[in-house]
Image 1 (cartoon, rainbow, N blue to C red):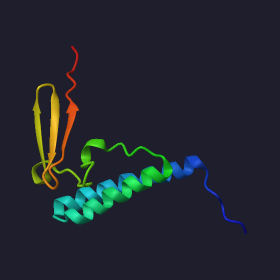
Image 2: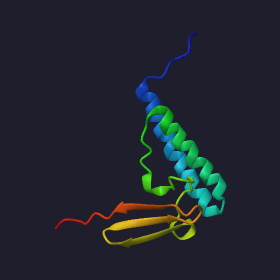
Image 3: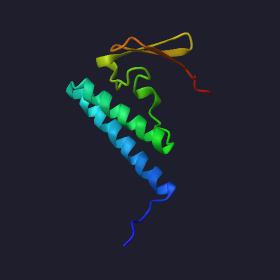
Image 4: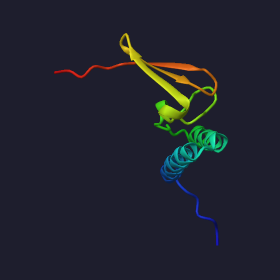
Length: 105
């Protein structure tokens, strides 16, 4: 019998599930104290996303430079001010700034 080939939609759905699972594992590992393993999970999730052209959807949960998973009191400093949020990675010192969006009345 021949192998069943997955369609593009099926492959993307599987990739999304794996990405979400890897980010969940990264969150568990960073709270356990294993920063290197959580970095590995984040980098694997990003590679899967690149390979299958799937957005990870977890933009503000990891450092774009060193791929450390952010756990606010442990390895990231979050500051708000002047209409933006600045997140400083305590592992590599990279600063990410995002606009602070105000809710409309």
